[in-house]
Image 1 (tube, helix red, strand yellow):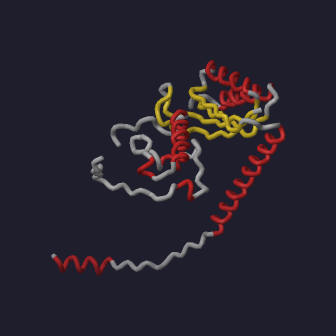
Image 2: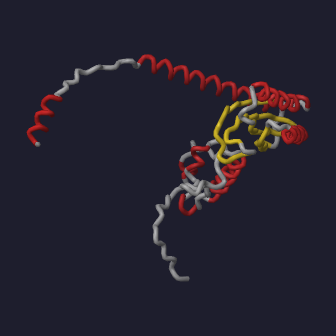
Length: 153
Length: 81
């Protein structure tokens, strides 16, 4: 089994159902051939660097998986037929990965995600604690300035 | 060979940025890192100006081309910039 990474862009006006539909058939093709999905990451709406099919924004999805090469051909065939997917790219990350390695990768991803969430939560808690705003007494000496200006004239 | 008249002396770094700092990863997803090696118009900056080593320059080029394919970086910038 090889480890692949596929990024695909879905039209921005496609709803949640469309996005889920695409992700579902991708996962079905992978698992049908006995592969493992390591990560499905939705990057969300992003501005495209150039117009693709006259769209300036797109919904990005990243899928990291391990499977046989035949499934990649099948997924790409489905992408080409689908109107919602405007751009896709599949890269090979690793040549040989067995089932255990794939499961380890899944665990590594889960650990990373939970640690990132924990770090974000801590950062939020820290922000709540730092609410010491000191309101200094500001002396408004505007009257003095006005008098000086009048003298200069 | 006649000496090449270099009007501008580009600040050439003595060490490759990726060799010295192992935290930097060359990946098509890291758009912020890749933008440092791309000109305003979107062209890849040559290695003699940036100071990367050959291996990392090749990896960079590949990553930039992949990012362009997936519209994270432009192929060519607008003539405004």
